[in-house]
Length: 244
Image (cartoon, rainbow, N blue to C red; front, top):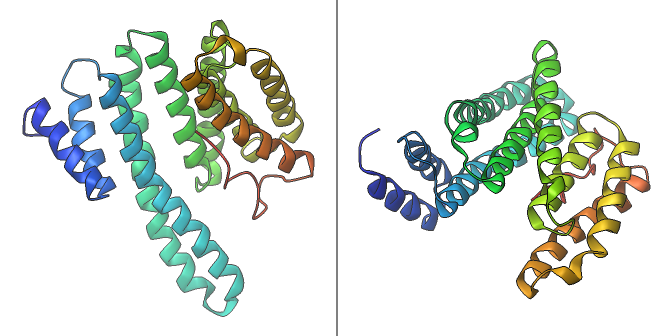
């Protein structure tokens, strides 16, 4: 990819202003392979770009699946269109997973950066599991479970109300419910996380408390849903209040 690091970051910022998420991801992936570790700001820019690119396709896919159920007479044509969206989403997931394994996780010099990337690996394995063929799904689910487990172990030394720790717990719980179909494990993790975090909030500064509370609200929303019987595969399954 052409251009200096500063030039690629500038173009990514410009793409962000224009909400051109694919372009933003393109420039930030270019920065990620330039040989030096991403700064906190660059890391967050990569995350924003790729997540928005994926989210657009995931939302489109949900709408298309709804059309398949509502219009059975046109199901074949709709399914073919869904495959186009699936291919785009698969490309996004495979690209970022490859980048995480080849450059980002290994270059992380802090616990925070390492956890950020390992959690990100779990997230994109989770997204990939939504459309993976049966023969591929078991492998990607196993990779996702391993990544979340590793991230969860890494954050145990952090304050239970730390936003990074809470973010890992939230997404791991969603994974357990939606992908593994284990609502009991999801509820258990969410309940323990909420209880421990609330007891530790006083040890944080005002901004850290605000960050923690945002994630705790999502955990509590999911906990209510799962406790009421929300399971993977339903229209409302934790997806709308899923992750951080």
